[in-house]
Length: 434
Ligand code: CMX
Image (cartoon, rainbow, N blue to C red):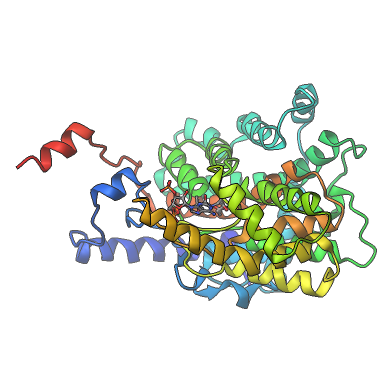
């Protein structure tokens, strides 16, 4: 099979033709409308952008290029990246070629380590990661080619160059940040010939005699890679990229969004909540104790982290897949057992609380089921990664794959600069005056 670049070279003209025909035939047809509530409510449910790498069905969860997530959970991260872009699975040769691309691009420049070392010791690891990506912008292929007068048709190719460079360096950077920030010793290097997930596991320096942690990393990087285009990180990356800002600007910006507690940071908050509950009740809590703790959290105006979702209306399949992993590798772990106990209690609590909210004239909670963040941290914690402020960095290594795949697709399709129309409250009032 051909390499990723060669496959894309074949596919991009076909993608373009398909979209041009769709626009010609159906360009003026309506696919969505917007209510006042949606305009004030984060545009929830408004169909206003295109993302071909994956879709999230409210009742099914993530579907990557037509494959429901749990049917492709065995894929390695490099295979997922190939799939996101091409809709095809690489054969052994194409996979090895992509791994060699990562091998040769994995060196992180010395000035990046110097910058990271100069940061204050209490800097959040997400801030370190996003700063490191941004400072490497001077390496951008897209930027350099653009300055030389690159043709529009080649934008995607330059974006692919940036994407491969960023993806190759991200696990090295992220693992280095873990080791620097939490005093785990010197930064470790990428091993040539080792796959992406195992390389990341290895560079984190977690003892892994049976290879279970490497398996978790492959699964983790697969599960978090993409979640269609409208979530905060992907949408931000899309918007920044639409101004033809290069991938370093766009990915760093998207990951800044991932760093928010209502988005990727929820996994950090979730483990915090679980540990707090265990500490309060001296171990794995009973269902009654969990109810008590949950209502205490809700009544103090906080959310239950890891539960609810803007699109999903069922248990997140990523939660289900991680749960299967936990049952095999850490069934006796008390943190994992608490996560399990939480699953038996929280949906009911949130349902009751939602009914209370409705009676008080507030919005219902649209989804009372767990999302990925409810469980992912407990697996990392089991393997000794107890520094939970770091977890979103791991999420980022993976999510960058989806964001970069989307950027390449956008430049291939020539997606326009993002510019939705905003209106003022005065304008809204005037619409309904009569
Ligand atoms: N605990 C308490 N209240 C919750 C809740 C939860 N887990 N989930 C939703 N609600 C509340 C919302 O805060 C909102 O309240 P207001 O109307 O007073 O603002 C109301 O229920 C309705 O929200 P919704 O329509 O159900 O959900 P949204 O699309 O507005 O928000 C999300 C989605 C994820 C931000 C929300 O469910 C949440 O805050 N969950 C906890 C944090 C979390 O797990 N985030 C990670 C999501 C996955 C990811 O992006 O990484």
